[in-house]
Image (cartoon, rainbow, N blue to C red; front, top):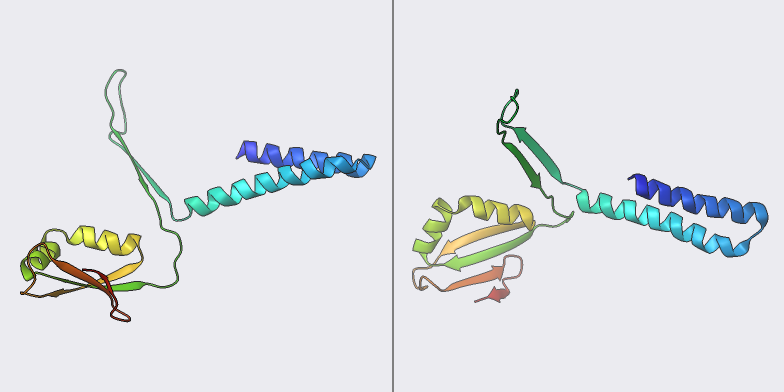
Length: 144
């Protein structure tokens, strides 16, 4: 953050010198530095939006040469999406049972990460390796 502020101050310095001494060529780098600092700050803010950082220290007090575990978890948010996409997945009932019972956490993470809602339907005529994905809003087949 300090470097961004220093870049903005440098740009403002160029603009001030350009205005005081009527040096028109200094306006271009002044505006460029200010825009660069502002654009960089916005880029970092937009990228870090929804980011969560969690730190857990394994012990409150530690003696010299003792090992301490520190767990740092960074959870990224997703870019803002207005609409939620709904998909219908048709697959074998045995595979569906496995997904619902053993892999439910993965499905929830997929829905959260991609702003989507997955709806499942078992079809006993489908082989274990066969599945179909359709758009729930219009029924268009996306993957078969």
